[in-house]
Amino acid sequence: MIYQLIQTDTCRLSIRQRCKIAKVSASAYYAWCTHADVESSEDRLLEQVRQILEEFTGYGYRRVTKELNRRGVMVNKKLIQRFMQQHHLQRKQNDDSSVRPIRIMACRYIRIVFVRW
Image (cartoon, rainbow, N blue to C red):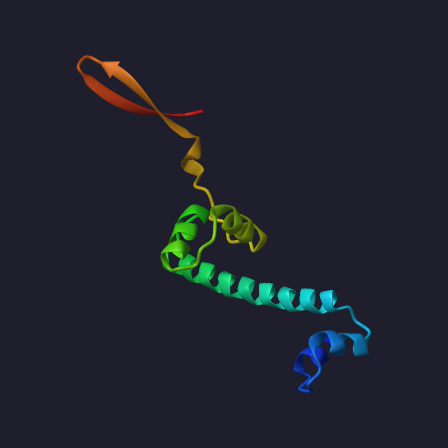
């Protein structure tokens, strides 16, 4: 691609001059450079998230976010949640979510009865 030629060119011309010769805007070249950096950082983040999910199988996006922050990768939970959804890495919910405890007072003891809603 033309942007790769501009990037690897070893002559003494500036980036703007190389872009002008190639008939490409400098802003398009710089956008291409940053886009390549974002893709590589997403690949690294995906590897780290998968590694955490292999170590800790029950972790959801909140715990994954905290673990990444402990490891020095500063990301917020919304990014990790969206990232895990896009790559189908969401933890499966247990079917026990429909069971709610109800407390019943009987004599002096408290019994906990589980009722399915």
